[in-house]
Image 1 (cartoon, one colour):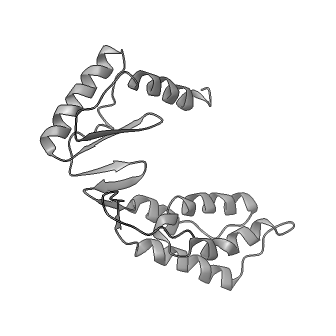
Image 2 (tube, one colour):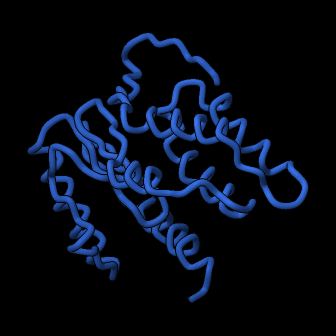
Amino acid sequence: GFTESPNLFGQALEQILQEYQTGEGVVLIQYVDDLLIAGGTEDKVRAESIRLLNFLSVKGLKVSKVKLQFVEEEVRYLGHYLSKGEKKINPERVKGILSIPPPKNKRQVRQLLGLVEYCRQWIENYSNKVKFLYDKLSQEGLIKWSEEDDQHLRVLQHDLVNAPVLSLLDLKRPFILFIN
């Protein structure tokens, strides 16, 4: 298929959704073709979900029944688990990272970095902990994997296995922003 199809559909959906107004106390979030409705009460979310499904139907769009998570306490969105005020790491993603053997070439290092990067919010001092992988990318020729590299990788894996539940930002409360 055409590699830009998801982006083009996401842009088209964004234009269609400009005509849609959410009810009070409800938020609609779009990322490409993934939509999330969140609100203060289950009744508001249920009513808004039905309204949105009807709106999309009128516009000629169909929703995947397999992907649909209708008014759930916890939903999987963009590979994370979201619930009231919390975000959790996807255990399947962690299993995937745990099962990866040490990389043998730069392509495999990039793949590992991509997987770990997606989980960076759960890894304290992320930049320092992945530096050894970026160093591998600057090596000439084949990469050399050492026992020390194994230890660094095990630290990353340990951090992911023991990942905390993160709080979602509450803009009504004061907060301090730390940049890593």
